[in-house]
Amino acid sequence: MIHRPFQQVDVFTATPYLGNALAVVLDGAGLSDAQMQNFARWTNLSETTFLLPPTPEAAAAGADYQVRIFAPGYEMPFAGHPTLGSCHAWLQAGGVPRDPARVVQQCKAGLVAISRTPHADSPAGQRLAFAAPPLVRSAPTPEVGAALAAALGLHARQILAAQHLCNGPQHFGFLVDDAATVLALEPDVAALARLLAQLGISGVGLAAVAADGAAPGLIGRSNREARAFGGVGTKLASDEPAVEVRFFFSTGAQITEDPVTGSFNASMAQWLIAEGHAPASYTAAQGSRLGVEGRVHIAQDASGQVWVGGDVVTCVDGQVLL
Image (cartoon, rainbow, N blue to C red; front, side, top):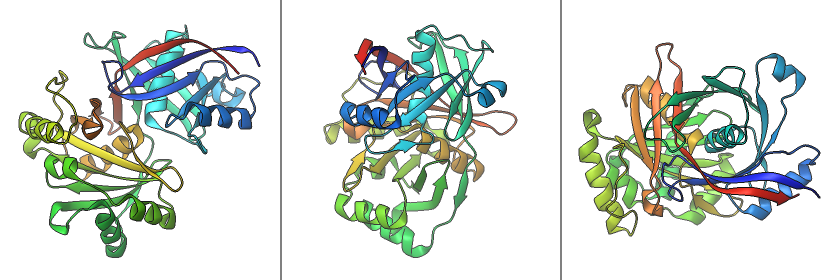
């Protein structure tokens, strides 16, 4: 066991402890898969990452570093908040990308481009955004949609659309009528856990889009609802969201609500923008019912690529014996 540089960062927030935490081991050289998995289990965070040099093949294709992403019980091919958090930690530790405006990350799902945009309101002076991986989506059968809706506590009249979504992780998404519907939801976690296991889906989420992108109306409703349910206080982030999101994922026999989910927001954005349900650029709020203020910044460029951005702040900077 040796001392290795370590950071714990908060992702999709400009304010420490109001986003989604990530543990980052900045030097994973020499660690076995079992050691990485054991440490991820010990941190008990939704994800822990280990940074390594890129493989020769990935380096030849432009990769700046390699990341291994572990949930407490398994390795993940790709995840959103570990991508931004790991990139932030790598840069903070002195990493220098080949392209000053863009970092290329190698992960199990392949190479992921991460843009760096100067942003005065971001603690690091820049906002990172990853290129959403290719999405495979399909309409569910009525039986699957109805079963998942029932487990979530959704009524048919509240559902505007539903899709199977896969960008590495297998997710299921609902578009619903209003932010109040999103925030009031009380899922049957036992039923949801059984269904996700049966269907081979890692998580299910839902989103509501404000009419005509009317952010002030949505943020007013969402924060009134959040306060009513003991969520966020009166302080609002400077970016007013036009979309409210919640996401529930399986950790074996249990269901956990995620504070902020990059991969799900990526797949939802690709679906909603493609179908005309959401504008090409918007900010999503997630975590309101958990007392956090996650903010995910979505933008589709001229080529059609969807970028998923957010602020990252360092909360712990030191060493770990591993």
